[in-house]
Image 1 (cartoon, one colour):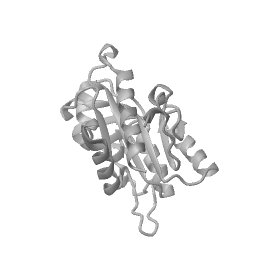
Image 2 (image 1 turned 90 degrees about the vertical axis):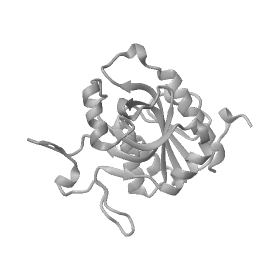
Image 3 (image 1 turned 120 degrees about the horizontal axis):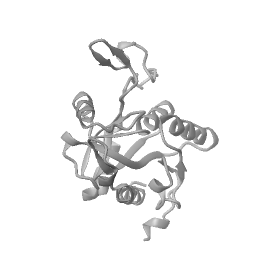
Image 4 (image 1 turned 180 degrees about the vertical axis):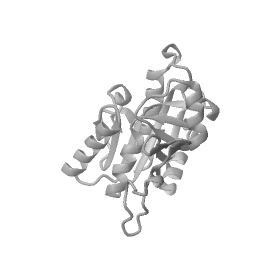
Length: 224
């Protein structure tokens, strides 16, 4: 089987840019544009116009926090997505949405209220991890921010605050929309750089994007 030409019906793949999806053109793919608003808008439009997908997979690149000790080029799988900059800034520091008391997703039947944290389905994540095998280096929390962190000290602080392995600009928005529509969600990211004092010469963007897509192709052939 040639995985690059595999078409899987019912699974929707999201990527922010063409670079992050160049090997996925035969999949059911939406290139959303960069950032949370573009991602949420593109996914919501898709859900409004098409039948409900059996699974949404977000893919792309990410920056790994230095204390997480993850090599550039590794691929990570999310078990939780977190909004890292929606909340309240007080004199003694930042507080999440619980400080306001208004959830981003209201409780509805068996669905729990969601504030900053969006836990992914543990059984689905376990299946994905087993399917990917050694292609995935770690599973853990991902952090979504509106800005890229280019200062090592701030990155270390974010890692300490949230326990996240890496940061992106889209994942929590996709997880948020999927939670609103009760659609299963996975996220796969290739590590293009460490979150340190910004030095683009050290980044491996194409390599990280390619590695993440290899895992997505593996999941498309294994999970459905």
